[in-house]
Each structure stands twice: as C-alpha cells, then as structure tokens.
Amino acid sequence: MNQTDKNPEIRSDVPMGPAIGLLELCSVARGVEVADAILWQSDIELLCATPVQPGKYVMLFTGSVQDTTGALEHGRELARGDLVDQLLIPNVHPQVELGLRREGHINGTLDALGVVETKTVASAVLSADAALKRATIDLLELRIANGLGGKSFYTLTGEVSDVRASVDAGARVAEERGQLAREVVIPRPHPDLVHHL
Image (cartoon, helix red, strand yellow):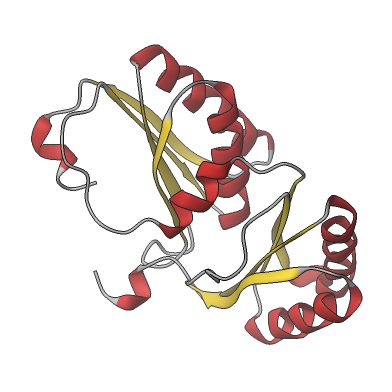
C-alpha cells in the first residue's frame, strides 16, 4: 500500500463532532474554492480538504449542528453541478473518527465480519454511522476513495446477529441514496483472512 492508497490525513488537533459535514465534488479546483468559502462563512473546523481518487475533492468539517448545517448549505450552493455527494451527521458516532484514522492490522479471530462498499465517500461515512448506531459492533476500518477508484468501504465485527443487523442498516442508508455497491456478512471468517484486514 502506498501513500495514495491511504485515507486522507485528518487533523489530529481537532476532535470530531458533535456534528460533521462532508462535501464531495468532482472538481478539485471547485473543491478548493468551496473549502475556502465555507471556512469564511461558518464557525467550523476543517478536518481535511484534499483531492482523492479519481480526481475528486473531499472536505470533512466539524462544528455545532447550526454552523455545520450552514457550511453544508453554502458549500452545496457554490458547488452546483460539481457536487457528487454530501452528508450531515448531527451526532456522529465516536467510532467513525477512529475508523477514519485506523492504520495497521488486526490480531485474533472474529465471530463475524461485515463489509459495506459504497460508490462515494459521503455515503460510506453516513452508512457507517448508521450501522454503528444499530447494534453493538466494532468498526474495524473505514476506507475512503484512495486506492479504490473513488469508492469507499468499511468493515465491522461483532456477534453474527449484531453484524447482520448493522450491515443491513448501513446498506439501507447507502441504497436509499443510490450509492450502495455491495454488502456482505461472513459468519466465522477464516482466521487467515484476519491478517489481511
């Protein structure tokens, strides 16, 4: 895995939440312009604003619900036809931040593994948040765009019934947005698979 296959770097000096917003544009130039405009418009913190594959631009920001909503609305107006996807999560689950920052491998065995793959970054983050709020599960990873041709995915683990319920909830969110690529639940994954997650 090279540097361009990793998630964009998210600022470590700013905590995520209570609300997060994300704008995903198909133009890098317009993305930079929108990122500047929302910073001037609203009292938000930009967690990351960067090009991602394949030539898209993603900005993830945080603040109060009111400020995050205002930034999202202003950014959406400026983005116009360059907007690919967006999200607003008023009360983001804490594991979303951990999933975006995760690096390394997992040791041990898993009772069940769930994977949800989406066509956009925003849909993956929104879907993962919904999955985490559905049942008691752990988010293993939340990979966005880079090294994936612009798609995103996340992996979950826990008891089989909880993983199945969470994957269903997350997949439903992505499907309602027309952005679900695929979802799977694997009960008792092979122990060797864990080393590759």
